[in-house]
Each structure stands twice: as C-alpha cells, then as structure tokens.
Image (tube, rainbow, N blue to C red; front, side, top):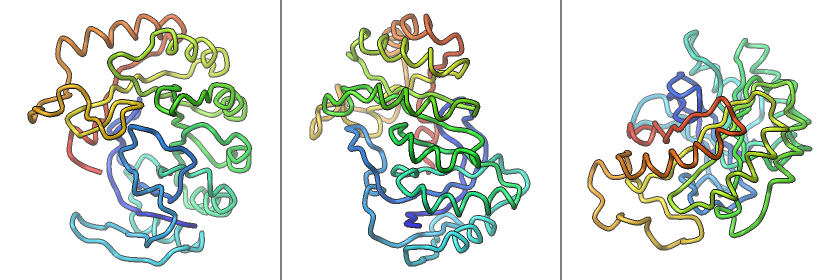
Length: 265
C-alpha cells in the first residue's frame, strides 16, 4: 500500500462530523479537483508518516505491506474511536491492497469509513463487503474542468446500495442551480434515503473557485481571520441551493469543513 500518513483526528465533514477516528491517507488520485485541499496526496511517491503526537512523525518507507499498515493503525486505535477513515487522494485506486488490509481491520473490531470521489464502481465492488460507511462526493462539472461524472456516480451508488452512504456536494457562490438540480434529481433516485451535505468553499483557507486555478476566491485578497465562516450573504445563496436540493433530499445539511475551521488535520 502507498500511504501518505496515518494519524488520529476528528471527522471534519459530513453528518458524522466530530467523531474521533484513525485516519489513513492513501497516495494517488484519479481526479484534479480545482478546490483540492490536499494536493500533496496526489503524489504516489514519498514516505508514510505516522503521527502519534502533534509535531512528531515516524517515517516508514512505502509501499507498506497491508499487515504492517494494520499494525500501525492498531497501535493508534482506542476503544472510544468511531472508525478508521480511509481518505486520500482516492483510496479505491488501491482496491487490490485494500482487499487484504480491510479484513485485518474488521478482525480487530474496527469499523471502516471510506471517503471517496465516487468514480470507481468496479474497485468499490472489490472491497464493499468490508466497508461500513461510504462518504461519497458528487463532483459537479464546474469542479472538473467541465467533465460530467454523473453517470459514473450513479454506477457507483448502485454498487454501494445497502451500505450507509453519506453524499457530499461542494458548492460555491455562482454555481448553476440547474446543475445542482440535475445531479440531485438523478442521485436521489439511486441513493435511497441517504443524506446530502452541501459543503461551501471557504476563502479563509485560500481555496480557489472551480475553473479559476491561480485566481483567489472573491474577497480573498483582504480576507481576515473570520472570512469564509458564514454570514448573511453566504446564508442567502446557500438557502437558495437548499431549496433546489431539498426537493430531492429530505435529509439535507449545510456543513463546512469543520476540521479546517478548527485548524486541525
């Protein structure tokens, strides 16, 4: 397995925000999202860092044997943890390795929480039996240089059927409501009673608007310490998107990246 880092933290996105987890961040990604907050995870080469304390990290050379990775996770695991979060990058790029790694976690009584971009349905089919939660992105074309991934997302949801799925859609001021509605209408039919989280981009952290790589979000030039943390203007356009998405997803939330607001991994 090619692993970037293993550490403990709190889930910062979605409806399980705040639960303590062991995070396993895998290397490599098949997308180039314009708002990516962990671009270093795209790199397949480099060491694995095991972070036991803030500011300290053990270095392990990649690739790790799945058994070695499971032992490292076990060394951080405590009974109060909710689950092991597989994140990235895109974890399912290493589905073959995960098919060996995940049963080892399950044998140790560790639930598995998969964070994925929802574009690799065949790879999901190889590991879905060992996954408890699937936190899946709905990637709008505006974040993918115009590429439309809706059909692939629907195929992915078909494989995920029967698992606890949490859908997330990153949104920004000016996103097309028609685009949001098209994705919500199709995904709601495939996702059953899964919740949908609208996750607004936050200029307080230097993220870039979709399609504007190299250009900061509006207001970024003079953003202060509270920029991007809500307010009446942001609430207004988000409420408009809720009106659109809520017609298809009764279980709807607006949740920013809480771990980044908090300043933790």
